[in-house]
Image (cartoon, rainbow over all chains, first blue to last red; front, side, top):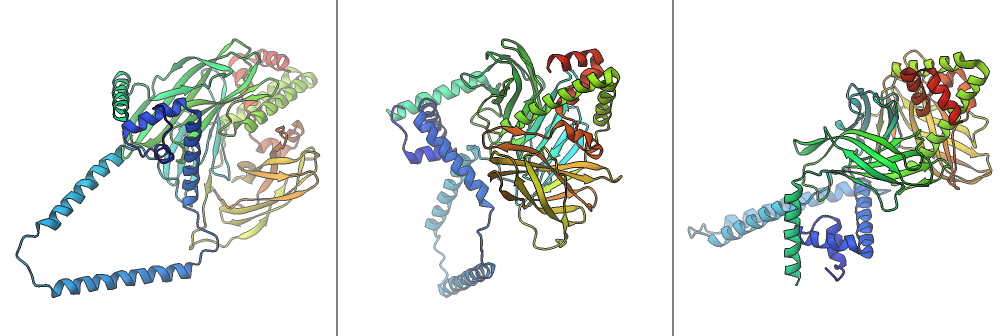
Length: 193
Length: 367
């Protein structure tokens, strides 16, 4: 690929949302082109920032107004549903086979299945830990286990216990280990996100 | 043209995948111009096994690196990435206390077990990349993506401080005094006392939250510290502490950009134990004061009545780092509470394995 990919393609590539052949073609280009590499890195940073902001609520959120709006939407949905049922009930029942709607539904299902398979192939990062998830350090015979939100995520130092460990109020953890073979100290550090 | 180009790429990818057969799920990435080169990478015992909707990755790497720079290396940090944005998806492995001459090789071992999504990766399952190298003149090389520079600098300063303390002990009290200190460190590390601590982040739940009470923090004022802790409080409810607030004052002549406050809490026997750290990026000009706050909650194994805070690390705007001086070990309660530095652990282990002469030789040669 000699020409630079379009900005939209770069954004899709950065999110891993392109079909494989096109993704590889752009990957080859990005490897050689510093300008596009920078653009990919910029988009990825932006995506990460959006992930981090996803669970934050805006300041001054009016819960009462939000609740009223949600209730109004639910009532609207119920009323619309009731109107549609009344309209259907007023129609005479037809015995003619309605193949056109069935075909549309089948085609839609096929599209959804194909799209689902395609999306399944795209590697997606796991969502960040939910707000309020706990970070727990446990010293085990296998090493130092760090749990996020009840799931054991990382075990440092295979087969030996840490000589000390520290959690940070920002969610990270740090632990020094002594290597039984060499006598050297190795410090493991893990970031919360 | 585009279709032809795509077909070529597709065929190339198929050939590469067939050739590799997913046999290289782990990768070492050293940038061009790196002061170290990879001599050997042994991944024996490493594996990736599906578990539920995720992949359980066992990483056991024995890497041999060579110092190709003209300076001695005192520390090295590798960044280990399985997944950029997930909790536990990235970390670092640091080897402090090195003394590697130009041209010499040295081993680095990485042992980790982590989970990552099952989805087939576009690259390696786990990537090990160079994050930083610290030289004997305290200059640093590397991308520093995990902010290891300040930690590596602090560990090197602590190592120099502790070797100096041991050398003074040797001069003043002889080999027996040195032996007693090393035995004390070995006893501490074998006791493996670690206070279980849980950090909770995010907003408080709307219900079932004990209101708690504001507790004034005990402040350890170190006369030599560039910052002074003026006041501090946290909300304490049973075994949980939250919303710490510590007012600090820059009494030095250099602006401060980062402060790490160490926390101590009493254990069941009333002895102070390390209870985490509170890092804070700040901008604190000389002669000014600022308040360090955090909204996280920390849950201890038992109810706490009192908490103690002290300045554990200060980084200045010019990149220099301050760590508590040797005098901190003269305070009996701190000597019991603070964990020994990595260098003290290394020298105590050297004593256990090779005897006192080996320690004496290192303390004198690295003075």
